[in-house]
Length: 117
Image 1 (cartoon, one colour):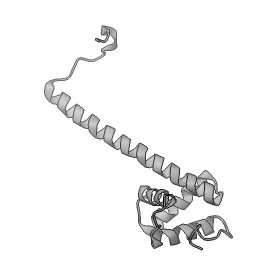
Image 2 (tube, rainbow, N blue to C red):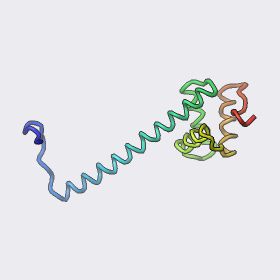
Image 3 (cartoon, one colour):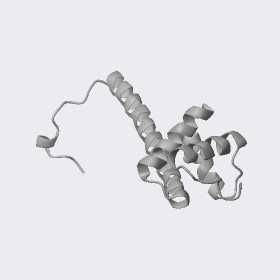
Image 4 (tube, rainbow, N blue to C red):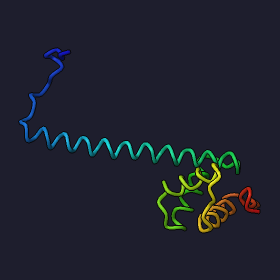
């Protein structure tokens, strides 16, 4: 299938430029894919916090951010750890303690995480 001439707004670049453009587009595509996957993991982890601790979405985001900062761990990795915990993987002690502290600060009177009383 060929595009109608009126849709082709620019001539094709020379071969060397096409290769460079293609490489840049592939790198950008990979970065965007990773960003979407990270965002989805963070959203799922926020959902876990909402379900278990009845916090708001903003509150869940703040808890994740706080845990990430206090454990010096990437936000995506904290999210993956929390998601893994819901699937039976243990929470590392450093994440568990930071998560309980963040939840307590965000919700006075909040207790320990289920299974860690």
